[in-house]
Image (cartoon, rainbow, N blue to C red; front, side, top):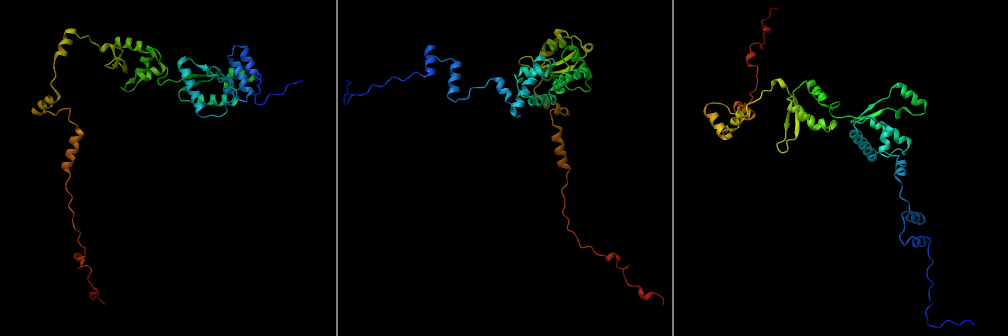
Length: 296
């Protein structure tokens, strides 16, 4: 005979049944794996994190992401220093799984980029690739366009400086845009007196270049250099006073200020004149009536 439950006694609760995830965790020592976490999120309705290929394949719009990818492409071409195909660029940026229209627009943007030079393939190769089903916009190679293109050696640097038609400076930062490791070549050309270099006082870093002529260089005796540096120049105020005393014009004077002062002295004060009434009194004898003198 079954016993009746005693009044006032609490009924014992059965332990919860283990869920599949808990059972799996228990079998693995209680620590869920990455695979188990993805399965739990999928079962709970959470969206799994897409892979890079899936994210690239979902790109269909252009904007900040497209500009960023082109910036990475330019940096890639600059670092390599050699022409690269579109497929090599897409593989480096992990965009090879993107949609076809994205690849086409990306290639068009690279060809129009100011820092990229497009090198088309020969017509025969383009025709051969077209017969294989490869579109024309996938052909050709892309190369980084430096601020000073074609200067990557001492010979090309001297040729570029000789072709200059003015005496303007060449900034080293522009030279390093296409030739990053040019410091050693600059030092060697300066030692051979083929270029003039302006350097910073703090660390001796080259900042500007000009073309030099080795035949115009003449060695100076070190003793004379020491004597030259020992000559002390007068102070600026003392120099101006001495020049003014002997009737010379100091070079520190601003000619613009002198011109303004001279112009102010030459200006005359304008006199306001009252206007008088204009009459024809001086033509009064001409306007008289002489009709009575006409013969009839």
